Image (cartoon, rainbow, N blue to C red; front, side):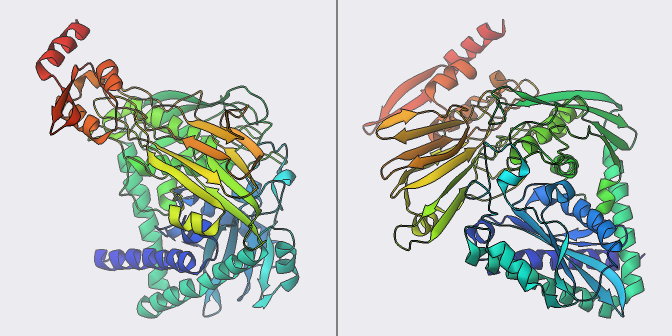
Length: 582
């Protein structure tokens, strides 16, 4: 196969998926898509459902999840007469397509000369899906029906004919009917972008040549991933992590991994994990698998995202466990167990290849939602704020400061847009001092913010990482825990479940404060260079107390031009560190 042709075809396929991402981001009405980028698009093989290409502007959580969704849908559609030109299927059933009810998936076939050539998929997060809580994150949910409407696989378009009754059912059961209808049709129109791009490629190379290129690209991704895995020492590596509670029962929930590396294959055994949670912190099996691929992609970043990259892996996951949810387990808080799955993979691989593995990031998406009647319009509003936080240190440097969640990459909506759309005012939005784990390479800082209600509405919080902090590796220290505080009627209160709260009423003047963890540290903090610690002090990343207690330095106060500055006494710090090591 001509390598130039392969490279052009690969780039063209990725560009088509990228254009689908950007088309929806620009066309969507809801800020959860247009600002937060909570969407994804991909092109898939029509028979196996394997990924051909996926857009780079959507969320990593859908990395392999859409492949599993398409594969499950193929089996269903075959029993319903198969795909027809003009069809568009829709579903959000989390036991078939993973994640949670808010993530709605559309799948459309693409035909060339009357033959099914590819499947196109669009995933978009709906700002509301009905259910008991505005936005769909329901910390007190005990079953899936509390969280919203379940959409089984059904045709939205049947041979080009819109099912208008289905659209009316959606808009009649959500709090934001205009936004949801607009996003639905924006998602449907994305397929025109995908078809146009595929038709241009077929015209250029021919259907047969293009099919051979796709097969070769998937095979090469498999070979590349296997070559990286073969560099990991053979062995069995164990890691476990915990969620603080499930929002209902205040007890930790364990996710345990036994990772077996054998030549060029990886086997993920999660059978030591706890049974399903009573509350909504459950995860579908397909999303557990997808999360493992996300972790591998963080370490082996240059492997192209297609079905071949997933082939070297196998799994043991107990059905009905906390990471293989079965009906009717609630799943709206799936972003918390997905963080623990990610961190257990990181923790296991850190034992084998620490120089290539970063420490865990902040590990909680901690979604805050607000909803109610807007006082200016009398229309219902729903606001969604996913946490930003710090990334873990690694062998080449410090962790990223104020990053999006590594498993979802959902952006925090801009302050200006939030205050324009919603009856609230941000009083604080800042980096959080001392939140990154200490280490030779420091974990990145988390974030803290506070908003004040300007009218009456309810808020819900669905987060974690207060009792079980992001851990460090290779001698690095853990990050700071998350914090949630309420200001109610002039009094400060902490939610009973600390990081989880459902439908708390805020009156004008009441407030919410949230602080996110940083990332874990990498390496011994006593090996951190003095100039790096000085820079941390100057930038406000760490306090004097942390510099002295965690990094073993002596800090003095100096004044320049009437301003106070904290300065490291290098000679005294060397003596202090020698005594500590002795």
